[in-house]
Length: 89
Image (cartoon, rainbow, N blue to C red; front, side, top):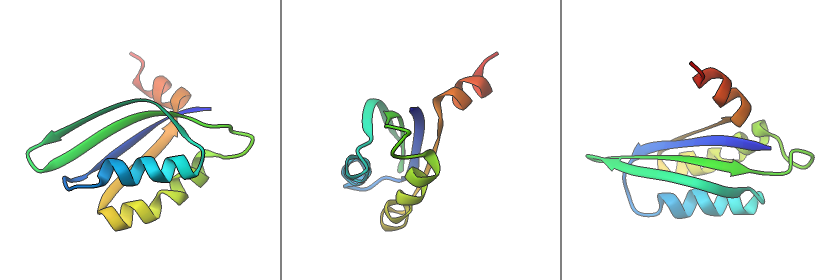
């Protein structure tokens, strides 16, 4: 399954490391990433993939909660199919 993950929060050292480490522990592969810093705000969009027979989106979201709390972030994930459907014109 492919999904789109967004990460936002106040910029500080270690955000990318914390997010990528948590994803690696879940065996979630990062296929593409875009990140930027606007003033003091960090934003990142990740295109990720994982085996949906082993893991689902709700589990990934739940397992990212400690990263959200520790890093002071907002992390959201949705299926790529849903993301594409919502964003089609």
